Amino acid sequence: MPQPWSENGVNRLINNIESALHAVVSYKLRTIFCLFSVSLGIASITVIVASVEGAYKKAYDFVEKFGPETVLIFGGSEEQRASGEKMKALTLNDIKAIGDTFPTATMVVPITMKGSTGVSYKDVKHQTLVIGSTEDYSRSWAWPIEEGSDLSSEDTAFGRGVCLIGRQVAETLFKDTSPIGKTLLINMKIPCKVTGVLADRSASQAGIDLNNRIIMPIGVVMKKLLKDSKYIGAIKIKFQDGHNLKHWMAQLKLFLRDRHQLKEGQSDDFTIVSPEEIIKFLVALTGSLVVFLGISGVVSLVVSGFVLANLFLLSIKERTQEIGIRRAVGAKKRDIFNQFIMEASLITSAGGVLGFVIGYGSSKLLVLLAEFPMHFSWKAFAIGFTLSVLTGLIFGVQPARSAANLSPIEAIK
Image (cartoon, rainbow, N blue to C red; front, side, top):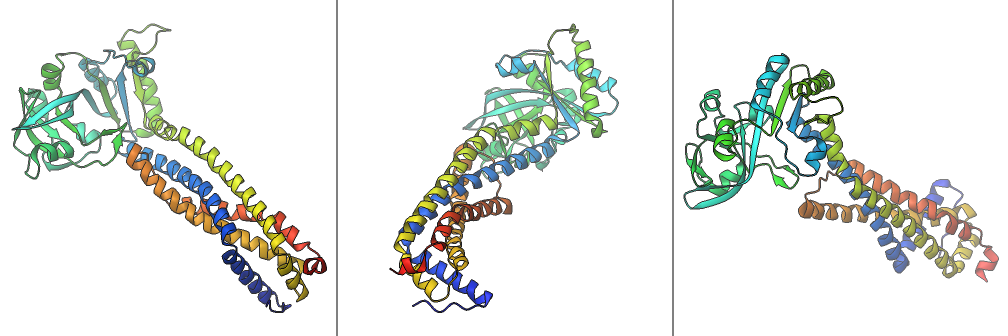
């Protein structure tokens, strides 16, 4: 039997909470329907927050490795690169000219590459990316040497058959043995002595494992793999005064247009990429998923709110006698109103916690299937939990008012 309601505010609050908990447990079917409808919406919201934070974290992590004071110049315009068209525009002479013209450029690193190249050691074969560069490659990418030593200026100058290898190449070709000093074959005919192993980089870029690469002196790659002694794929430039990066980018553009004899109105035959543009690009990758999940999450929360409101309105008809007895023993309108609001909030709060768990599991699946960047912090839980409580408060108001406005006499009848 319900206990008489005390005038003490604390006792009233305790009675409201006890009654709400009892109702949540007693009306199991209603609770389960509301719980799962809210949890689906919160799961979507949780994935959104985690994906946005993950995108920003990945972008800033990548920029930290890329170098906040560096730019990367590719051959070909943005339109040509987007269409997959290759254009030979950057040359080794550009490297020297940039170094002579820009005294604040502390590193001017040429880069050229050949993808899907066969490499072997004894009877073990592997496909990898071969990059031609200089002794500054690892330093320009803030990529430490985990084992052995870096390429030297003499290696680059004399075109020696030496190389750095990524962690995946080392594990595939050499298993548990040290690769330092051993000679592997590139394209079954080009010998390459391993001098060092690059540290592990767990991040992937466009689905490509960053650890699956070999770095060789640029002259060797150009002459023996690409059969091209003039053109290169990219130039990485590190400036001493990185805070003036936009100024140097503008100057580089004018300088290269002049060197390449491009007339006014002609498109650039190169593309300059800055850390700021990398951040925008990587964050934009999550845009479509955020929009999709955002719409579905909001719609799901609104639907779950209507489900909750209708189930509560239906349950009021079943509980008219209970409400009448409570009013008869001293409960006021606000007590009935508070009890129903608490019931709704308790259910949606539990749905918020369940939704966070579902969202966390879904995000792990996204990471496994699509290598989508995810990062969970207190924000994902706080936002999801707050929205779940608000759903209960907003959509629980109308049923709570209906219950509170029931006439005690009519309810008992």
